[in-house]
Length: 240
Image 1 (cartoon, rainbow, N blue to C red):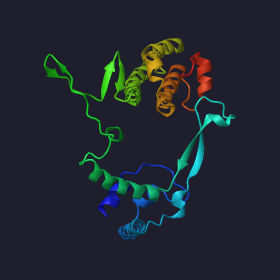
Image 2: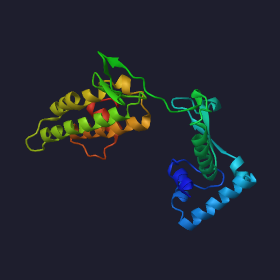
Image 3: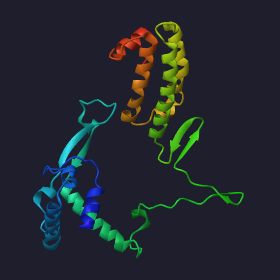
Image 4: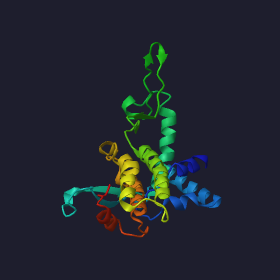
């Protein structure tokens, strides 16, 4: 039972296969249902009788970003298989790894456990860090920039607070001055290093759009519900 629960907890939020069973279903099963599922798994392991739906996959074509969607070659297929099958596979895999790795029966190219190289500078070991900043841009070990986008968003939100103060309706600056302040305090931060961190996933980069939107709304005195394209046209500012 511990192996089954561990396998379920390791699951990701992936879609269901042809059997229509989601991981969310498995995470919310009662203890009695889990025992029933464990009996089914043990029976499959003993008899080798695999359910037919486990041998099937629902293939979903995903369009490649920036490609012509009318061309079938510009899609990549994603195969959705049974979550129940993958749960049992993880249980079997954990047992195999437990036996094979201590005996060095797996090739080095098949293991995903990599030890970091030990580097020394003047006789002192250089610590390995998962993230480093270079010229104001945060790089992680996988050359992703999600952490930099979060840092940038937090930094720009502070600058927006200053812009709100300067944009007071009674004694604040005029529209032209506020736009200059926005470009200086916020837009400059968003533009800096964008040729580098702009390679991050679009869903991550979209977190910066509300910053751009809020800044233009404050500078123009517009409502938050004002369409983005209208703000761009009125302020003479391009999108991020």
